[in-house]
Length: 521
Figure 1: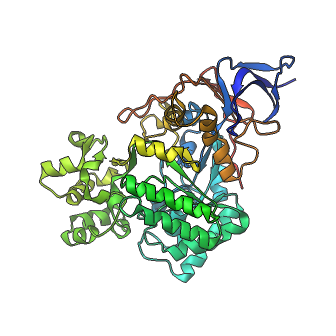
Figure 2: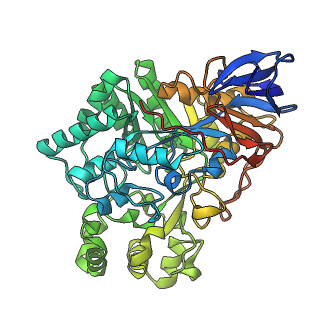
Figure 3: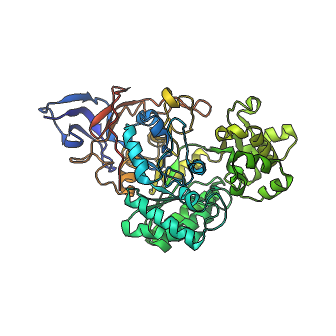
């Protein structure tokens, strides 16, 4: 007797091994048997003509808050995602010092969910109350460590501040976080020295936790950003995951970044990397500002933006939007304040206004200062050939670098590019007929490889006694539907999705069940 039998499918078990025809029997939360289960009894899920794979693992998600606002995780479930890792890029929901300041390092914040906790355990408890549809695990975000202790500044931490951050980090790890993440390119962490990060990483080694690094430089000079991450990991003796390795600065620097990873691996550093599946970056327009400009709230920022002296000083700040001064690569997305500028490059807007790029951005921020948190931009930065080279590398795995979304409910009016497309795009891009990965290997990159990277021994694979996190899809149909300007369209081709043995999708429709868990280390 089984609770469920997935009948008649082709099993790709997440190891990269050959596909095989088999049934999958489930009892409770776990897989009980895989093979010919013709005599087995239980509720059947038809997988005829379909692939049966481990549920996909999003190793780099930013769903920290959207899962509280709408725990259905619809955009992810429609792509077979059963586990997400949050707390990435130094952004996340703990530890919290000043709640208002903490919003500078949280994606997807919603006023519908009060930020009334201050610790990892408090966040995890709130997430459990929300009952997410999928499993969630979290890194400790370095940006929140700095905001809680150092504040919004670009200076290095003092010894006393570093001690306080180390204690907060240790507490969060003890409460169930899986490692430390940095976002050194962001204003919240730009002041952190290499020695600060190395010291914070050191305690991870004894726990075999992971250091996840969004490098300090991802445009011109990107190889030095990767080299810094490697030096830090080697000095601290920790395992390293480089986030979105492909830089925004062209083929030559991408090849250098890959060579650095290969060389570090040859010298016995446990390092791998992930790559998001968009050909562009996605961030806030205010990311162009140095920390000190935002330190005194909206009124203080307005004064800064009006000051010619302050503008001259801000132009020396190297930001995530620097883009080598090529403002044609940065595009303003739809915003109520600037309907005539929507979907146009900063370069063309600046030319129309007779301004230099940064002055144009400062004026745009000033004109929408009360709503600048929704003033978003795309940064064109990658080619399909670059993606193909990165994803073909044996140490790479895909990631959303996005938040979970839903086309209805409390998040219906929200957008995060990549949310509805990342896993479906990756599979379609890499494993289509004539693709550069076999279907089995593409599935491994989405499941078994990130599970191994994270230390999840009983997820990411299909075998008896593993948790029954399972994605059943039609390989001929599974693909993304959302586009650059219509990003909120569900993927197609996913038929059944089980999380901890419970169907959250059956026959292509959500079941309404939310059996996900907060996975504490």
